[in-house]
Figure (cartoon, helix red, strand yellow):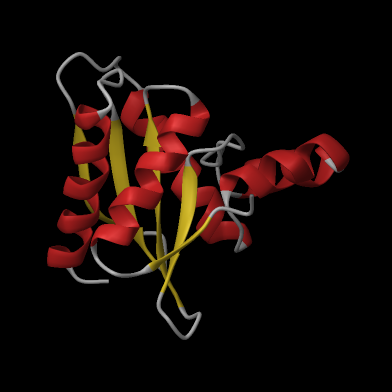
Length: 141
C-alpha cells in the first residue's frame, strides 16, 4: 500500500460521503501491518472520531476480518474479543465501518476505517474508496 493509493482511497470515500450529504467523517487507511498511511478528519468531526476510524481498521488488520465480522464475533465470543482488545491496547472498535483491502488475487493490502455517520454509511464509504482504486473491499456482509 503506497501513499498515493491510500490518499486515493481516502478521497474516494469522502467523495461518496459528500455526494450523499453524510455527517462529517474521519477516515484512516492502514497498510497490512497496521501502520497509518493516510488519515483525515472533515471539519465538524468530534475530538476522537479519527481514533474510532483507526480502531475499526486496526481491528480488521489484527484479526484478518472486517469490523462487521468482529462485531458478530463479539456477540458470540465476547471474552475472545475483549481479550483481543486488551492485547491490542484497546485499539479495536468492533462495529461496522472497518473494511479490509485486498488485491484481485486476494492478498491483504490493508484496511480502511471510517467513523462519523451510521456504521452502514461509514462502511459504504470505505467500499467506495476501495473501489475507486480498483481494489477489492471485504466487508463480511
